[in-house]
Length: 228
Image (cartoon, rainbow, N blue to C red; front, side, top):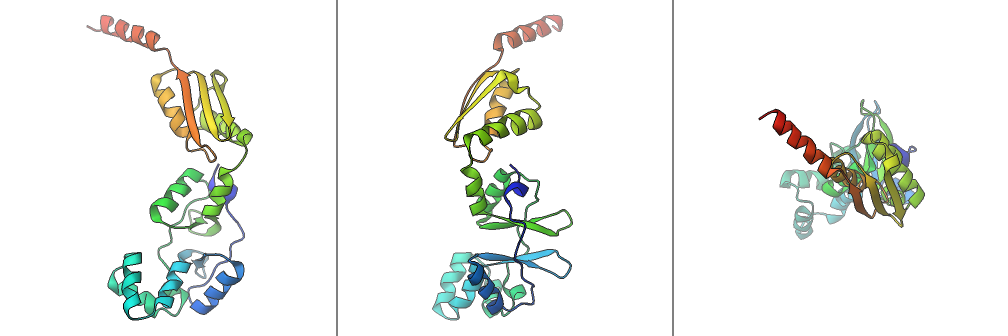
């Protein structure tokens, strides 16, 4: 699955010159935890999150040290966020984004590594086309075994690895994948499970793929005999 398969295309955005009160009201009304900040040209400039607004709640004094440690920001940047009045002054920039054609596994990795809950989805030009959230990835994870098996056969085996899946049996039960059958080499047998594990909804992969070890060994011996 790709990001475009699960992203929300109707995205509420905010301009950088909007007030923090205005942005906070939108987030509260829609019950969302962040807003992409978009300029007049339609390009994504940053993201305003609940965390950015919490800086204003902290206020001056002892609590500022707690938030500084919490967000690990340099003191000048921390103080700038405390003094922010507009979205552009408070937002986190540049925005961490992803393309619509990227796999969901990549979106999940970025969210975990960067500690973010949402990713604006942008075209190569930088224009916003959607947004993908952790909730979207969770919904993709609970899809049916049939959908998971179909993606493994079509997107992984045929399109990504260029393999004939007729010699590979794919069985999915509650997200647990069992692979069996024959492949051409040990490299294929090791590569396939790693690709399958990235498919959304896969809980575990048990591979019993076999490859012609003896045949390969005979071929290697013949090569050595012909090239002493």
